[in-house]
Length: 103
Image (tube, rainbow, N blue to C red):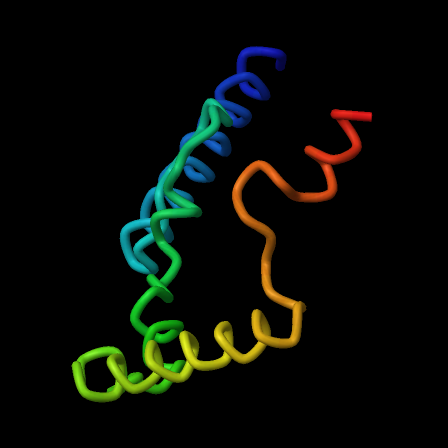
């Protein structure tokens, strides 16, 4: 009787393996009977880089040299105005840290 149940068990496990392989072929799954780590799950996902790039609008002012020149001129004018009021950045080596070190 043990030989009959052994054969029955072997036949049942073969059927389970066959069904598993057929299911994997039909649905496009990857079989991993050993359970080792595989990058398949990560590689199966959609790539989202293009979607992220599309979310942000294209900044045309970076291509236009006239816009860039005007922004630079405005920046320099603002710095000049701050320096006239005594609020500009200190010269190199004369900042708060340098004064603190010299004491």
